Image 1 (cartoon, one colour):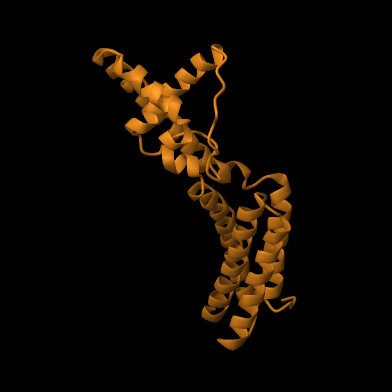
Image 2 (image 1 turned 90 degrees about the vertical axis):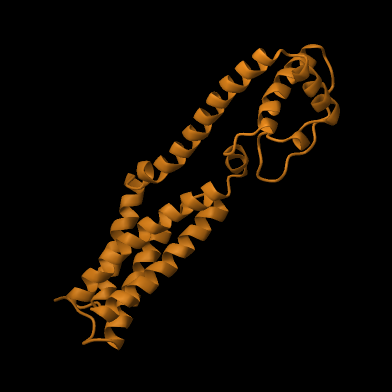
Length: 214
């Protein structure tokens, strides 16, 4: 069984990696790839059992099926983790700073400028970033006006704003992180996924036992 397990593990790992890469770059989970994960796990188990051991059997098929389930789960979780790690906005926002606070104040100044009919020449955001978290994300004249406005506030008002916004900011970041954490669990056993997972397990078992009816 050692050979079957090692072979299934290699095949399943390759399949999970393919699923993760495709899911990350396309932004979609392609269900039939799960079937491919099962096929690779089963083929790996069959080859491993034949090379190391007495050949493929029902036992090696069961090993392949179990590994296929684990590999499919790993592939789905890897997609979520890759997207999470690539979330530029979350990466920037995760550490609260005075600069982020000033962005919050700048947004208030923006509202005032827009009410007054001022034209705002917005700089282009970096690729993959959709919110403004840094001084460079704002026009220089607007940022200067923001700092001037902030300096005109009393220390007590500044402290109250800082405390309120820090709490709001930390809550928002926590909500986004919880959303990422729940994505895989909520979608893992959808009806559509279940079909491909069953096919993956069936193929893994069939190939893993060498295609024999025992």
